[in-house]
Length: 299
Figure 1 (cartoon, rainbow, N blue to C red):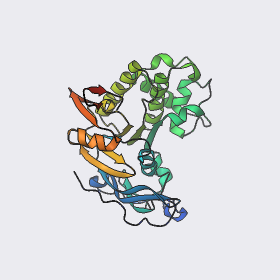
Figure 2: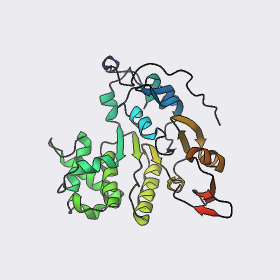
Figure 3: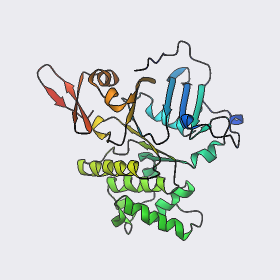
Figure 4: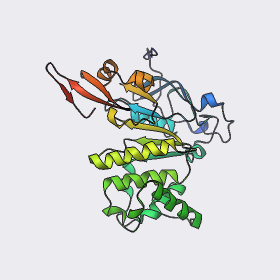
């Protein structure tokens, strides 16, 4: 494991992106710089949110991002998508270095699946229109989609095994059905990076397993986007995710191959409780270690 140094002295600033930093164009970097964070820190109101993050994702790599609440996971995602600007350090996403590319154009190649979108969708929204709206990064249709857009939307719902929901309004769908539509909406723009921010939150056992299997198939498909999957739960890390990044208090606790990272000492340190980690086939489970027994938990 790498030894990640904490910040000794936080740089000044609030982490906001300077207006002058959005420059159109920008040459693509090499494959080694597909996604790279170099000594990235974020400070807000004098508080260190992220602390000297160094992380590299290669093309075709799929990562799970683990950490307790408040560890900095969502903030890291916002940096990757260009919604926040680091106080210190350099960021390259999809081969484009921040400060040398137009982030508005970059975001067109980044899909985001998060439950925050669901509350913005009108109750009577047609699922097909909701999916197509992803091409225009809007909630609702305010432009005139091509018939090809609707054909692609139908193809996506068939791939994601949710074609039966198209005739029902969005508001009556189950949580699992809504999450699948969110994934279809993110995919219609044909992103090269797909960020999945706790997509299984709130799902029952069956819906969760169906969604996780969908992600497994998506990640193994030809020309799949790079997947970054955020979770609190080891058992949600499907085999397609070969690497894991673990955050704790804004710092990288560990980053590397899944079988090296998902071990009891690291997981206990990450979640602040003694844990046992077991493996059943290609998947992992964690439970709280007690004096007399092993209690499988939601970790």
